[in-house]
Length: 408
Image (cartoon, rainbow, N blue to C red; front, side, top):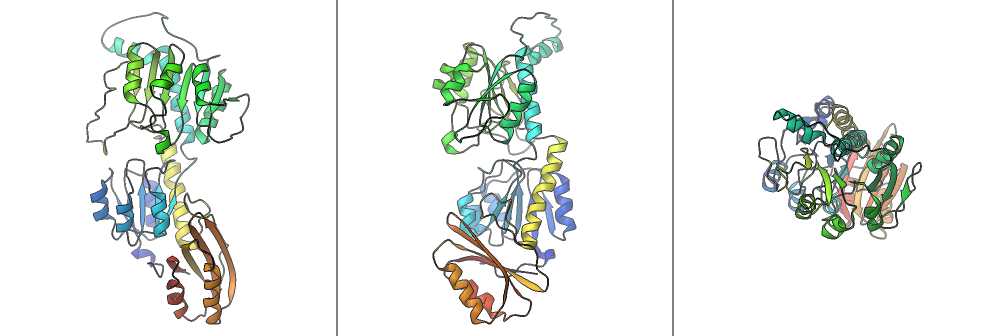
């Protein structure tokens, strides 16, 4: 259980998976000790590496398991330098008082642009024609070449990426329909479908933008392919477990689908030195890319600055307003005061116990706020700069306490 904030020069940061260098610069300029690694680490490697780490930065390949979190005694925060956080056991982070931040908007445009590019590539068979020409074959024809204008695009998942894709596709003259398990308002002339099946039956192009939760595993399988139009197109720039690869290959080979574009896969190499192994290799109707949907210079720079900014703000002030897993709470900084950060199990009477202890030590509260979320309670309390230090031990000894820090 953490008691006091470390001096900045004792805060160790580990950045994996070739996070943009701007993240290193921001953490380094703050006075932290920063180590960067190009690839991801497996569970045992990470358990060994994380023991003295206060801040961990990852992308999508690194898996943060219960064992990893339980081995990270000094861990304060995890930064997911991407949109998704399914690779992180958020419940276990809650239980250990570890705050998780991600970058929900920073690479949206990059993903949208490449999805549109792949739509056009598939509808015009650009990759196949390019490969033919590299082999010396000149095949000028319009067979199975189509405009995307007036085609129906079905967007599965109408979040940040799906909704922006909707806007741009409509501007390109496409008809947009979408399906989301949540009640999302349409933008422009997009039409919401009542079910995934309804969307699949109508769409010329299907683009997937859902997260990798178990409930979405093999969301698109034999039954879904059977519902799709003849010569339709499937694009997956979300997560590798969403599409049943065997079913996809079958429906490409039997010509039910005209083509597909995949950027994510059930199993992916952990670094650029490992070989890519997949059943989809060698099928020319499937355009493959190595999980680069959000990998543009602009997006990575945005992510590289956004996530560290939020983590540094949390370390310095306790601000969790942009966190993924914690109650969203922020208070303005107070002068001539100390800030107590109390993370606890969300049980009745904890706030009363905190304030009773503070009162017993005749300490004046200058500002205080409590927020709860699920099984977690989060309290920021600003107290006078002169106080009895024994109050810290007393607060730490509250049975529901998960983590306690003193700032300023």
